[in-house]
Amino acid sequence: MNSAVLKLAGATTVLAALFGLSACEKAVTAPAAAQMPPPDVSFVDVAQQDIPVTASWVGTLDGYTNAQIQPQVSGYIIKQDYREGALVHKGDVLFEIDPRPFQAVLDQAKGQLAQAKGQLAQAQARLQLAEINVRRDTPLAKVRAIAQSQLDNDVQTKATAEATIETAKASIATSEAAIETAQLNLGFTKVRSLVDGIAGIATIQIGNLVGPSNVLTTVSKVNPIKAYFPISEQEYLQVSDRIKPGAGGDWLRNSAAVPLTLTLANGAVYGQKGHIVFTDRQVDPQTGTIRVVGAFPNPGNVLRPGQFGRVSALTNVLKGALVIPQRAVSELQGRYQVAVIGTDNKVSIHDVEVGERHGSLWVIRSGLKAGDRVVTEGLAKVRDGSVVNPKPDTSNPA
Image (tube, rainbow, N blue to C red):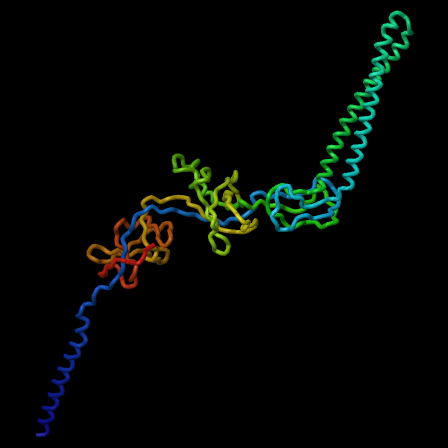
């Protein structure tokens, strides 16, 4: 009796275990059998538009004109007439040299001129008297009313007077030239600015003995101000119409049509547009660059020589370029890839060749065509061959 009960209990236990195992299997396989919905992704169509290509270079600012102020005469500095760092105008007196030695030379030259004029007056009077005597004695000598020697003396006196007059005239001319030189030198004791601009720090002090070899200060014309920036030889070949006949214009020669943008060291974009002034005559063989000079209006003299900035300019326009948002591009070990959604909503991964950037857009040189749908949001959810639920990207792709 006990044995039968035990057998019946064992069979019941095995049956219950089999039913429990079957229920577990159903519980495990049921979620797996249910299909997951396709992930939502955002997409944009590959657009085709003209893209301006901008290049930028590190530029150094310098005065449009930098005039080194040097005296033209030697002497002691007795006065500084300008404030360092201030705006000065052409003709303003910057320094004064002791004028007394030059005034003395001028006075001496004037005295010599007066003496030469006195000698001329005396010689002219003697000449007039000698001419009178010659006219009077000539007929008398012919009739032997006077000795021939007297007429000869009259003629000799006339010749001497004429020679003295010529000498006096030469002395007058010399004295006048000496006066002019002395007046110039006296004027040079006031050292003046040759240009309008900002006057720099004085390199000398009052009481210093200076001469023509000394630089007293520098005056820089800074409105407009120049910007020097080097471009590579390759860039020069790209933008020069002389190398590409028939192109849309020479970037370097038609400078008025190429506005320059200056970004200052603090990241601020300067409010005035510049233009190209000229290009240097040769490529630097050491750096492989050629120097270009631009000019920027500088009202208020805010920009100063020696500042650094970044000069930018439009160098080309890509006609009908294919562009997509930069966030649609993935980079992996130097390869650029884009997820493209097909007409059946399946994703295919395309390798692409990227080009220039324009804002938040990226030019695609190859690997896509206009109208392709590329994933912009949800890239982490897709893989090659997966099915997605595409929705137009309503955010601004630019």
